Image 1 (cartoon, rainbow, N blue to C red):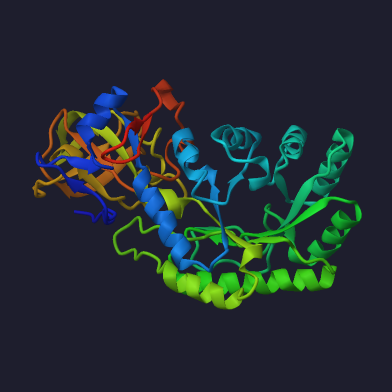
Image 2 (tube, rainbow, N blue to C red):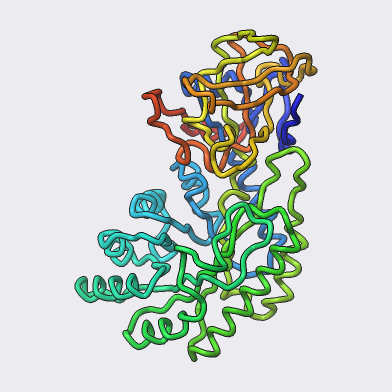
Length: 413
């Protein structure tokens, strides 16, 4: 038997023993959307998560949501009044953010390969462009001149340090992201001299870290670097985006971050000027609020092992299959949603419907006995799920999605 990660707090069973998400049992959610596979998101959990973050972080620190984590439109619409800005990484995400209701001036566009039309779209919208190279700066200034508009430009910095223990290291050494720290000051001076609306610095060293001490150290280094750039350039950055990096405990043995301790340490670093700093989070805000539901369509035995074959798989939930950046595959939290209150009774592997051995949702896990028609729940599916997975592979239909606003409120689809 192999362990699974812990099911996040906030989930329970109804009187029939079925999993409840946001006050609605899984049967009613599936009936509302018409079928499985299905991603269900609990908006109350998202609100609680952001409320905890605001309470933990320094007062006046801006909180931005990186919509790459989950751009589901009803979720974004609910986020508008909860966060201070959206961070996007393409023209498509920019359009999605604006359509959801976020003002252009509260959106920033990042990404190392922005096309000219993306730069132009951001300038027209009044969004901040996080410049990733000197050449991109030239293109943005030229595009703005042709449009007769003043561009809002920030500089993404590739710092000399990295976020220790991060799942993906975005800074330190040779990277395609941002401009090496040693070359930032001349660019800042050039942007100001060209008449651009200089919006500050974006310094993002890594993501998915569960090492609170490492995050505190990185934030302190980031603040120090921003102040050094300010001093050497002669221009105070209006906003310093500290990035994120806050990880989620996906696997057995993982420990959740103490965000209150991180916030207290950050308050000591930026005392008296918190209003010019922001953190940019995606995964930490939404991951625990999402559940992926797939129905068992077959149960089979092979050489003494039992397989529960579902109508879902890696084409919807790539990360849970172990094919999204992990070196050694480990099990996400998983349960039988239609027997959520039942005790475990058998060792099984949960697989998807695709004809590839990579399509595994859980390996050798202990679950309540389940059969055809039961529903499997994969937790921590609120981030990097539907849009981070190869939905077109083998031509299966995309997963359905639903956002639940609470037990007494309407269900949003």
